[in-house]
Length: 445
Image (cartoon, rainbow, N blue to C red; front, side, top):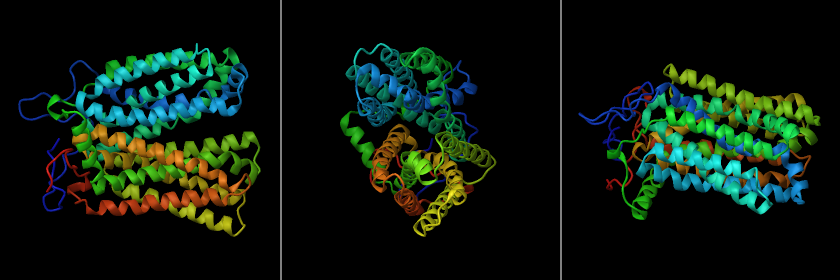
């Protein structure tokens, strides 16, 4: 990795050369970051499995809600608290574990976090009360954050520029499978063996993930690139990140783009069934179609980036597609002309979504190579906060009104597009590679 450049364009050196996914060699005489004896072929599969944990932890037990409510003699809101506890734990975990990985290394936190997550999932199967289950879910969410936030930092450590964007694109494409399959698996397990068996199944999956991570994830952050110090160093890192306009531009583009998706997720049951008057089965197929389109778009994006396309250009194209789609649907809805045929255009939104996730993530984290863990933590936390704020606002329009849905989606995408204006201060190096960002704690210009 290169050392920190000045934030001025004149002193910003070219970014590190693109790699094929291997960790960069350290200074002369030092070994590369990869630990000997670990297979590089298992790195991406391990990171995919780790990224599967949050969606599986959220969606796999959704079919169990009625049975859980009956057993604990509570209402749906009481069971919903277990989901809220997981999401809050996930957000807090990213804030804590990301910076810790910059100090202590990536591998120990991934292995420890996955171990705790597996243990807490197994404990959920034997929870005697709803309060105990809720507490265990918060622990599970906190520990699940390790695989997500530290996993993104591992990619930043081992690849730069288009190579990193390609890896992030592949990761996003593959993890898009989880929200589709998790409820199906949970429904089968619940029907066959009850809701507690869902947690046993999830714990077994986490143990397998731990084994793959043990073999496939190396320590990608050498000791000489770690940050020592306590609270002061952590605050210095945060200050460096939050004062980098380019980094902020990319994470806001990512965060508000993701918030637009959550507007749809929150409103889709009512939009599909009450506005478009689809049956429950038809609504499920429509929802799955959107997830499938986003997954395929991410896969194509990763392939195109791998052939030399600019991640920054693809990011702008993706946001433009999303803005035109949501804005057009908003105009049609206000005109009273929305119907099923017109609503099919919403699939274009998911095409654009698949183009922004991997590219925005890579561009943001590669901007801060010396604080990739912290950079990943801020990105993930912003994603969670914006999604949590956007989702409940979708209920303001009622069950049979799509105006609030498309207004919220259009507003979020508009802010994401405007956020890219902050990135214009970045000097575009040779080959349109991702520029190296400021080192956390670097002295001012």
